[in-house]
Image 1 (cartoon, rainbow, N blue to C red):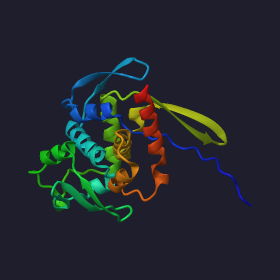
Image 2 (image 1 turned 45 degrees about the vertical axis):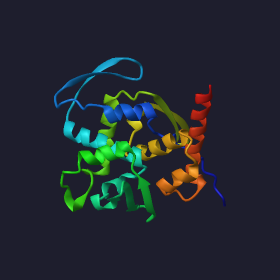
Image 3 (image 1 turned 180 degrees about the horizontal axis):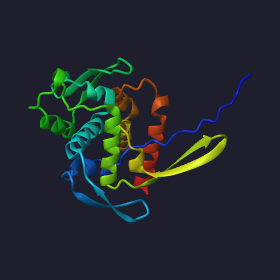
Image 4 (image 1 turned 180 degrees about the vertical axis):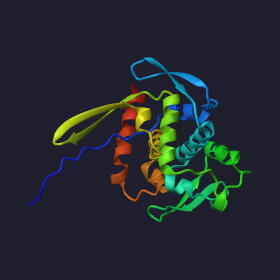
Length: 222
């Protein structure tokens, strides 16, 4: 007996370079500020800002992942002592791989912002739970109006269902790592070099990102 299961590939949710830089430079409003936003249909609505400090820290943490390729779990345990000579030297929590990741100027700027702040266990960045950070990154994406419609296909009770949402509704902590990979590949950096930074061991896991990079190259040629 060999049952066949319908496997639907999920869309790879990541920020474009322009979206990443918009988030990186975004000035989080003050608590209580009322912000006018637009949904993906162009309709206006307002939102009251809360937890501004947590939103600012979440922006920095997410962008740091997007500029270094770190998973949330590795970013959350990164210590100041893991950063030597402009590089991150760390062992990944998920796979126990040893990584050496050179820091670019954006990642260095985020670390410099917190270099004089003392966190528990000598951590390099402020840390909150993965679930809370997922909530805050969606909030940030909404404030930045990342409204690109994205459709996911799934099956419920044997019925095919299409679910379309704005990109910000699908953002999570892992989108930072995906953003790094897609950006690096679209810049023409060889996959084997990107894999050195990310810790991927084979091309199978990289295939969805390579396909995205190829589409970006085609658009650039046009």
